[in-house]
Image (tube, rainbow, N blue to C red; front, side, top):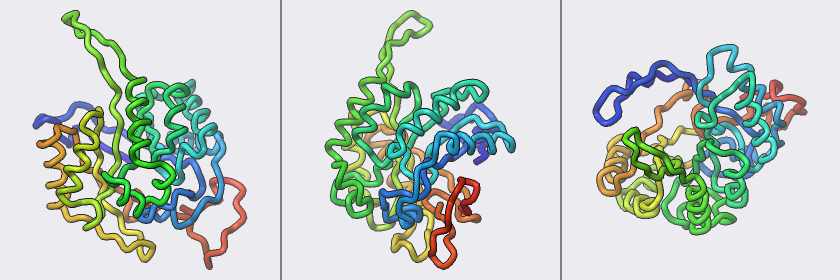
Length: 288
């Protein structure tokens, strides 16, 4: 995914930087989480990718463009392939890739026991949590895995994770201050399901004590696999405004990319002729 940060604005001013490339990486073939708004979830779980297969994606992409950012937001639940994920990131941050850990983001639906280990195994990487609802009952409706990872326990785990990231830093003036690493919150906007004003207020109150950035994600159609609709621009803007003005939470709207090749967020699925799974021997045998 190619971006130019100079085209956006932050705080009403042009953003610094320039062209950059972000690689969206898969960690599994299929996914067992079964999120009802995601085409990958309709496949079920096929297999874990090995450390080599995960790193191989970076190798191929680096031949096309210098990669500055890596996000584990492709096919699969990264924390369900924990050991391969950790080893792959260690390879990516070492020679010859030498990616900064701060430029790597791991996304999860909220595998609590793995989140509890993550900071100790991989420091300074970014954690993104696919929250998608501000209350447990809605979350369970659209994310079956939420039943195993209740919202209250998940938030407690995230609070502990964020405490571990606290660092004592010093301004040039000599004044010391504490800094916490932000957690990224992913929130897909589903028309009439989780995008009303009341949901924005519930989300704001839920995250009021956290250092977070909320990323509102427009729903990408997945054909007959889902009954959900995409929230209108006006609803998304109102939702964002409530979070910003009422709760002072930094909130962005994800730029849509890849719909033209059915490769946008939530659309990744193996094309299985006649719905019969082929014999898979390598990641390059897949048609995504």
